[in-house]
Image (cartoon, rainbow, N blue to C red; front, side, top):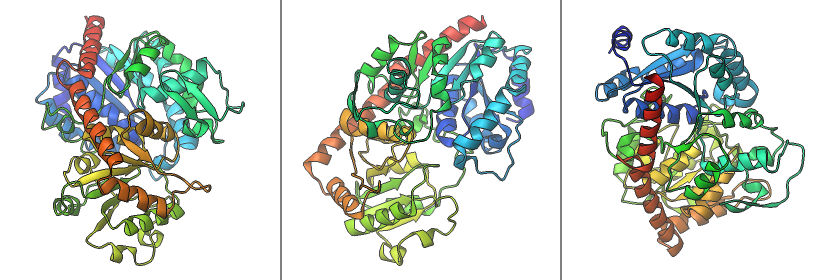
Length: 484
């Protein structure tokens, strides 16, 4: 379907509601919100997915894939963009705090988003709701100006949301006061200071969204990329604290890797991932026995120090187990071989494979993969939970320490690898943890059993009548009432 054909269809058809989805422009936020947009369209809604012009070029590549999926659903996803002033050569994934926030704030609070909403409101399908990423606290002010309902979309776990909410409303932390070493949280138990998101224990400053977290009290809905079974106690606790209904709508993962309801839904969107997977990955995995491979990946923007890279390499080599390592060179390093120990690639030939990108869900669903060594970003954590794969965690920053704490002590699906005083996980610890995970010990047998339990629960949540599917249906019905 061409852009013109799509516009004609939108002009002819009256949808049951029109949702404008505004993500934060990094993969970890864009991907789950684009999948959420697809899920809404499957309920019969028109969804306008809005990006900055900088990010739109990448997302636009997903149009053909989305159009193919749209043929099988009653709704529609259209891709829109807002002009910005970001130079095309700037790698925004490396400038989150000091660059991207500034430009998105300047663009969104200018006339860009408001003009787009006014154009939609003058069409046959006026806006029923603006769903905005929690990292964009200025968006609801624009929606309120135009008397458009808005929904707060939290791309991290409900548990991490409860931590931020606790410090905002109970502790009233302002970034200045030192926190005690041990803290006790409702429904989560004891956390050490190191288990909290990095903004609480590093001099990174108070996040912009934390300053404006009060805006969630004005939201008509709070949407969370999680599922009820995983965080039921925390969700029940939060439901007593926020005004609007708190609805889980996840895991925001393509259906083919979750509930199987739409086998054609295999990607968030062909263009949402910026790199193509090397053909060698699937062939290499096919050559390995079941549960024999350690999958190692630390996300799209998490920066791993050269020293930590060397320790991981030495530990993996010493473990004598097969591994697939997806590694993005740190900023300023373009030669991957120069970062790895001398002769490393030759020593691990046949047993290890090192690539710069892969389709993570395809890897985690492959029968040869036995454990996932991860930074514990929320998307990767949901991928592991939804695939039934236990984890070895090497958390770095933002919400990752809290996710790792929950993985190890709350959901009991992984082990946290111990860091040295320098904050680096040493090669001996990596070797020990890999051997423990791959050599059939009782501990990891239990972790694998728990992981499979959460895999089944995640799939149930998105099946017809499941908790997240029911929440999406409720959201759709309430939007239809607004649009009527």
